[in-house]
Image (cartoon, rainbow, N blue to C red; front, top):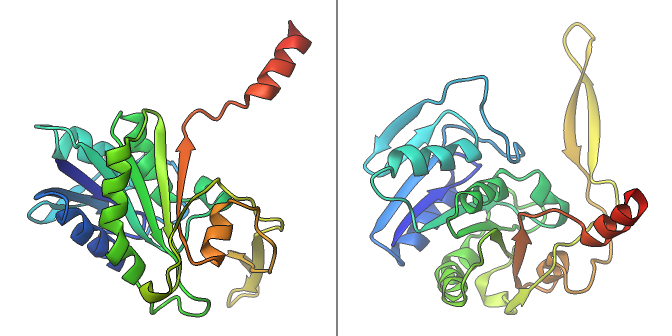
Length: 253
């Protein structure tokens, strides 16, 4: 089995080393194609106005000056042009990708691109305890990543479906199992703008995120993290809302 690995945190991120170690327990044929630098939050964007630069940094390890989506395209069509990957793994992301995060996440987007190319694809993210951003505990992903992938592949990943896996930010000894979940929805305005001023007094802005306590929807990925469970969420590429489609068809019929 040939496995293509990428991420959105960059080629030198700790999480991609964790994911490569996971992948190498499943196959000897592992190829890493990841962004040159941090691409968090770029979602499913393509580099259409700039050329893509591919750099081999070591055997089977390539850096791309581009987005996670660019990396998957480059990996499939250039690096692996002799034989397509059988599986795309994206991550392990530094922090959760839950609820509406999936619309922003480059980690999820890389798995989307793999899915669009007809390759089974899994995105994996590791949460961290509040205030522990710099000293993340990867133990849940390390201990349960490979067996989670094996079980998903054994069950089968349907065409046009990607799988979003999140590991809770707790020591592996505190893990409470696994939940198959729906994509959650936070009930507050997540993004905020922080205004600052430069040396000449002119304003500039940082996009940030605010945290508030709320009760997550039952059966959601958000609830699984609170319960210290691994969350497995299948996501569809088809975004059509069929009830609204039917209602509009009547209205415009």
